[in-house]
Image (cartoon, rainbow, N blue to C red; front, side, top):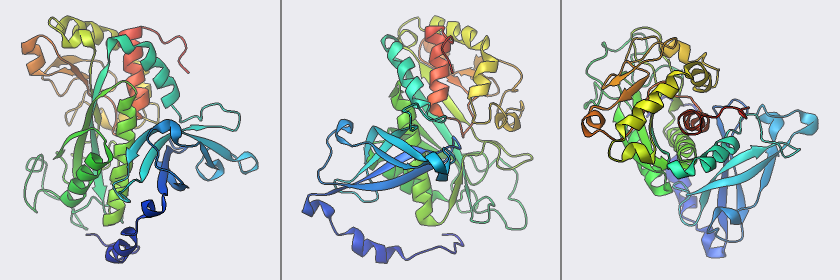
Length: 369
């Protein structure tokens, strides 16, 4: 599919993948975690002598944190605590993928382990039943870092015909998208849909609705699966929020959000009340909506290309140039959800969802680290 010097013949691999370790009562479990970059994921596999039925049956493990930007070589062991389990669409059978939290040698959470605090906040807010759905945008790249399918010495035509497009001259990399969709469904990730985006080689998938902490779990696993699928095709995935400078759309992770009162009759009042609260914490949210404390989003949130300005807070019905959009149907129904369009495509969903709940439900930032 791409000019890829590390390509191997997958038909040869298939001969070995047909061998079933389950016949000997064993199971392969791939541990997946977030490294010190706050963006990239790592993985390694352990053999278990049984098939785990729940996350509590999977043992803790460790790894060399000095090779993942998380520790010094003189004290390098980091601990992996299983947090969410999924079926493995690559090895299939009884094999599993396990998303893990990372802890240091002294049992404190690693700097990029935002799941722990998010889980605590979601537990405090459980009576409000916070639902989330995130629209994950990303861009496919060739091995040389150029957008996949773009002319090597130039650019495609201007934006316009690519969004939800059909045809070899409008969309690039659909095989990766379809394979990822099926992999998510097999794994048990709550993928809700997918579409080609405004910039050619840019795509989006949606995950949700997810309750509380499961939003971050399912989005991180969906990202891992995308990277892993693209690896098979020799294609690179970037979640950079502005991969191409100029008159090209950036990439976001628009976050749809509601609480139980918002979804009930008259819920529009609760939605508007939440928007007022969000307006008063705009700076704090911007800092948490990308891994560079707002630095990445500064390239994307310019007030152009369907974005609001990073410096201003705004809201409106059906307004894709606002910080917060109320869908038109929600405005007509008088209940439903709102869309926070500020999170960047490379955001940590644990930080995003925690911030939203802290602001709109708990009104509490006192213990935020």
